[in-house]
Length: 482
Image 1 (tube, rainbow, N blue to C red):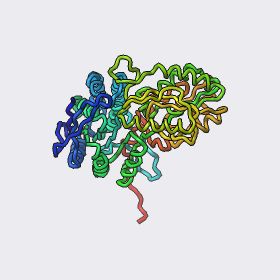
Image 2 (image 1 turned 90 degrees about the horizontal axis):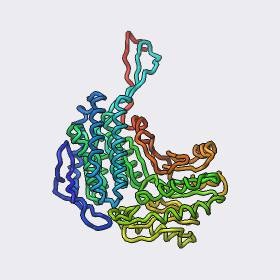
Image 3 (image 1 turned 90 degrees about the vertical axis):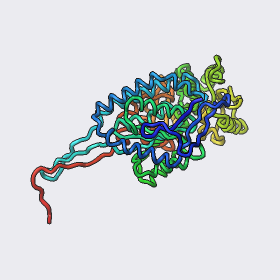
Image 4 (image 1 turned 180 degrees about the vertical axis):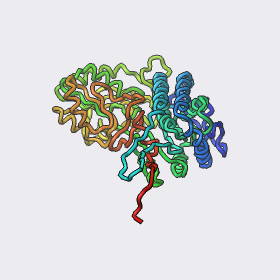
């Protein structure tokens, strides 16, 4: 069992009132981590620590910030085994956590490369003798709120570019992966960023709303970033707006994968299986809708069903498990209700659908239509639905018939044809002949519609985590009308 204290001002500490909560393995029920349950006063203290550290961190030369972030990347990757040891919090496979660590290290490296790319510009002025500049400067304290499903990647992403831009950070850990999020804070602390530069707050599930509201309302918090569900994202966005704080929101998705009539079906099947079922479909980019031209739909379905039948879900430590567990049994109950609704209304179960506690076998459903909840609701599980259409325009209509717009994919041997469609798909991300699940540290990552707004990643993040200021220098006399 892992003991998980708070990280405030460089110090590990218990909650002020001594309270803790437990996170249990969803498969075995064993306690994985015993976690400090922060009070409102602890939240205040974390922000105060970040505010106190801000002048030092913001004043560092960019290459010194770069050096410290690069050191953090190396330390994070070197401690991969510690992150994998905490995978029991979410029931994920070890290979998923290993991938998380590798990409998170690259996120830190990419952020390090950005420290010298935070530039301004000279703007011509109509005022004689006025030298006008637009400068980007650090904002102050940034609040990052990260989810559990890709815990190392998404918590690191919430921290890395704010730090590169010269801000300090308070990370609000997920109640479902608190040990992992706290370990990220410790890695950054051990890498020598400085006391208070990164602070980590964990809270009991019942206290989440109050802690988040307290953190956002704190006057020292100048920016907010959140990755998670659309439901909670709306709340975070509303709270941020109430306090006039810009928020970067990356929310839910229901990614479509379009298979045109000329597609390489084997390649499309491989991408669909990976995109729909990796990490039990608990990825914001997961392929939920397979939108297939009717001319090739039967052949595609047969090939995909054969592939899915080989993907056994089970206890992550079992040798024959290809896929792991859902985050908890309640997730399985929720997803099974979506499956049952579709089947009751005439859809056909092609393969999968068996639920045992938090273990749900990968599921493929054909014949889904708009009367069924699975047509519109994000399952956030190992479930993909087949939607058939006649021709590219119908496939495009089906793809865009969703409130979400995060990731999408198109398979076609005619890349010009696919690119023309990609420009019409309503999503922040679209991959041609690749899976919907794809992330690289330097790429702009964000969605449209109910999938949020703004982009994480490399240069795209700079505008979110800096303040643009207009500064002038008057050379010589200036004329005034009075």
